[in-house]
Structures are given as C-alpha cells and as structure tokens.
Image 1 (cartoon, rainbow, N blue to C red):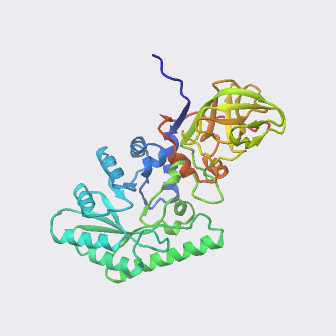
Image 2: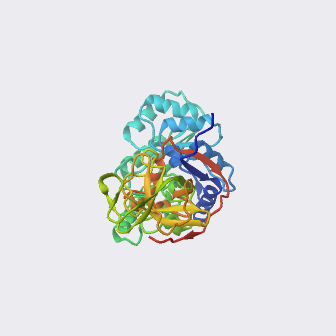
Image 3: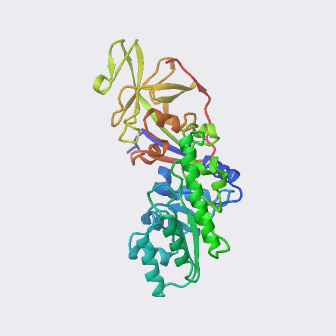
Length: 394
C-alpha cells in the first residue's frame, strides 16, 4: 500500500531559528537568554526546537514554558538546562513536584507565598532552589502589587539556599512611537525599578531582574536587565505593531505549504465557494488548494489574503478568493499561466511573512502557528532555498 500524497505540510527551518536566537543576543549581549517554548514551541514542536536551540552557537540560560505538563515533558528530555514555569504552581502538590524536580517556578500570588513558607518551614527540601517573584507592574494579569511583591521577596529570601529573581511582563510595548504605548510602558518601568530600588535599600546587595520579552528586547534596552525572555521573535514573527518580522530582520521558521488539486475557469459574474462571498469581476482562472481550517489555516482569512504559488517558472504572489473551507481554499491564478496540478502553494513562511497573512485574517502570527493541526505533516530542515518572488497579475 502506497503512502498518501502530502496534502499540507509545515517546513521548520532550524537554521532560521538559530539566526533569530543570535539576533536576540545581538540586541541584549549582556543578558542571559531564556527562550520561551510554551505551547509546543508556538506550534513548531517543542522537543526538536529545544534540541536545536541547545546546539546553537548562541548560549542560553534556561527554557521557559507555561504549564507544569509542558515542564514535565521538557524535563523528560534530560536536556540538562533549567526550566522556568511561567504560570507557576496552583497547589501544594504542584509546588512539591517543582521543588522535587528542580523546576524553577514563578510566584505571582499571595497563596503561593503561603504555600512556600509552609513547605520550607517543614524542612522537607535541601539544596538550592530558584524562584521568580512576579511583580504586577500594570498588566493586572499575574503578579503581586508592589508592596506585596516586596514583602514576598523579603520573606522568601530569608530561607537558606533560595535564589530569587524579580520579574514582570510588559503589557503594551508594541509601538514606542504611539504616545499611549510609550506612557503605559514608562509607567511599568518606573514601578518595577522602584520595587527593585526598595529591595536594594532594604539590604539586598544585588537583585537579579527580568522584564523584556520579544518587544522589549527589540526596542527597550533599558528593560534587558539580567535575563531576557524571547518568545515569538525566535520563530520569525514580530511583536511590534508597525513592523513585520521580515522588516525587523527576523527569519521565518515555519513555512506552511499545500498543493493545487484542481484548476477551474470561472466566468465573470459567477461566484466562488460558500455563501458566494466572492464574485468574479472577469473570467478568472481559479486554483483549488488542499488546505483549510481543518488544518489550521484561518477561516477568518479575507478575500485578498496573499499566497504564493510555486511553479516551474518560479514563485508568484497571488491572493485568496472566497471563503475558507474546512479542507480547501481557492486562489486567483490570473497571470500564473504555468500553474499545474500538484504545484506547491505557500500559505505563510519563506517568501511570505506570516505577520502579513495574519493581518489579513484579523489575528496575529502567534495564533497561526499555534493552530496548525495534526493533519499537517512536519518536516525539519536547515538552510532551505529562498525563492525569488514576482508580483503576478491580480
């Protein structure tokens, strides 16, 4: 029995991943790097991503994940690097697991401080442990308010062999040219620095800090401190409101592809797809591509969302026509005269920035990556060829 022809596949360029990691270091050379590989490395595959990063020339300090299940999965890989649990523990059992396995956990609420004190006072754990005390500097999601944060830090630093890091998260740092974004971020930075200064004034010689994720790494060197936590920029996408990853100089790691499975000639005035959401203004050559929202291509993608069609003559940029179906989309092949059945179609990635596609779908590239489903085959490569792109005729 022969294997079915691939209908949709994601090519993961590990060389691009490592180049993006190197860019993190170039922006924050004095900071230790903690790559964020939560949500299956933003849909790219946590195990392969983690192993590629460990073998990269750019050295890292730890990995960060969001859930305890992710931390345990990563722990089983025996990569011999610390693991930071960003969402922290929710009860004594989870805390016990973190301490027992040496998982570094974020402490963001008073109930967690109480649980830590209870377990530490019982003297059940020996050896060093590292905790990350999260300050709510204005995001109002996870984190302790300033006074509570200082109190927690002072309480926990009294326990022997306990290393603490003060951290926070920027909520509105995607556009420092926007007065509202600038004002909000400045306020967060002031509040965070005030907490740090009070801790130092209380007798702590040094307070290690972490504030910058991808947006801060790229635009706010004053937030870099001891540790930076790159997330989406590792995968080639921009955290900034006015620039794509490509414009920043990042490399696309995931290229999402499918293939043409039918080509139809549709007359002017006739519609394409469900609900007749696109009506041809002229006689149009329409390609049917074997991918849809059942594979993770966004149903919200609007008419005109860009795609690339790769033919023997090269790669041509064209556009989506009609509504996205579960298993198929339709694209404009006007001006792509040499398009044939089985030709590859790139939905985002090499030659077509995922940030641009996401804008047409009313979302962000993070969501594109994370929603790729199990129907899609994954291929891991280094140094794939980058096609030349022509505009085509639309």
